[in-house]
Image (cartoon, rainbow, N blue to C red):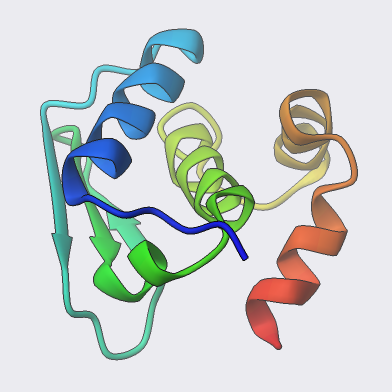
Length: 100
């Protein structure tokens, strides 16, 4: 199974997606989190669960895009779902894998 080998590679991937989605990510943290895969603040701070580093990068992409889209769409409504699909294709399969 593929996985992120370095924290820096994950940070770089977040920056790549932020640029692609035109989102100003002011700070990126990878740290232990008890209940979530990620969170974001209105100030542009992104925090990601460090468990993602040991997972398939496709799951990391799902979490990254999920959080970055919340800067422009604060809910999980139709617009958010269509943007997820536009950027990741069948994102529901990734979501199911992450929950498993």
